[in-house]
Length: 75
Image (cartoon, rainbow, N blue to C red; front, top):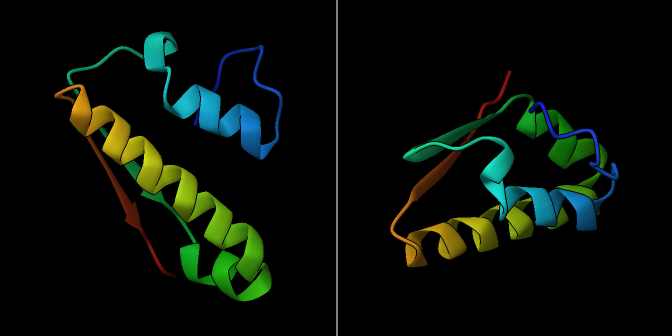
């Protein structure tokens, strides 16, 4: 993803940016999560944090009538 320049490169910043998409306005969002299986195996705790943030963001956007889908892609 091409986060704004103020992105702090940590999970809190990811959470903030993914629920404030004013930097990337759209009617709906689709996030393709490349190499999810490799990430899950190498860093299971970090992978779970990412999934938790993405699931929370999906719920947030659905409550605001905007679709956000994320698709983990395995290689």
